[in-house]
Length: 407
Image (cartoon, rainbow, N blue to C red; front, side, top):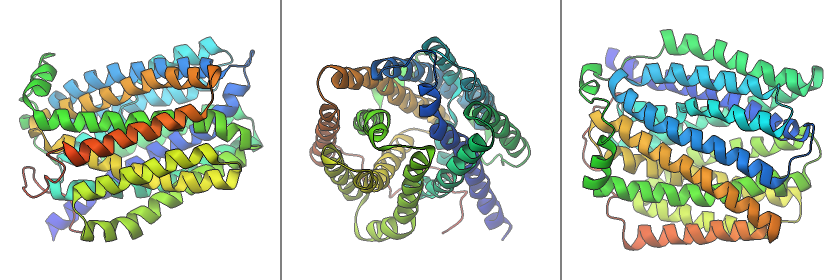
């Protein structure tokens, strides 16, 4: 029974960390568009694209560094460093009043690495068979944060101002997360074993060169995220702006996303996992994403946009979780930090390149071309998974110790 209590404690604390982290993220997401409007000079979609691209480049560099150090120090230290960087970044946004202010603040996104660190931590406490389900369980606190974060952020902004609310976000996030990380997060894996991996830059090259399954997982991750970035940037920064009138509309979008994650976790996913293989589950999610990316081009109202958002959010969560499972099952425990760092770096490099591409499409052509790009990338992903992927059903063996409860 004591072992079960320990397993439950691990998952509970990780879910609490995810809730507090995403509270700050959704709080900021609710206010960010309005803060970017409230600048000395109005920024164009291209200006926003360059800001997002530079921030993503900083994320990519940070992912490599964090992945290497995490294999030496363990994920707990990386969690704390990430919170420090991100809290300063969130509060710093509140004083940015120009393109240069937003641009240079992106340097702090070097430390925006909690999600990839959480992937590494989760990989050390779950078996391969459990991992996709465990990753999807983290969507529950994420969904709760999507509900409470926008409400708190928008209400505080209404009572005070946008900038006061955003400044408070970073402070509250730091004060809430640091005690949890310092005193509640269990050490569930062998740090001496992790410490056997040393800070050697060429370890990344060795991993990619000699691990076919890791290359496969990284390619699938890049394709999934590439399609998402084209969709998310234009839908949020262009299409949604044409429908949105107040901060309440932004909060409604986040609430719909939260509801979609909860329905997917508790209703749809249990049924699909019983009736399909992991490969079929990934194929189903990719097919749904194709439909969403095509359908969003034809939305003419806020309500239609919400329907597409609900479907896209649930399908993307499943596809992303499956890609994460494949990446973490492809390596030994001592290389988990490097593997998740590589995945995060690849993901943020996509975030670097695609915003520039998508913003140029909107500026010189038409915003629907970005959505068509997302659909084509998803079609390519579906074709690759169906015809060439070899590791998508690798969930039978147990290479890692199980430290989560039997749900």
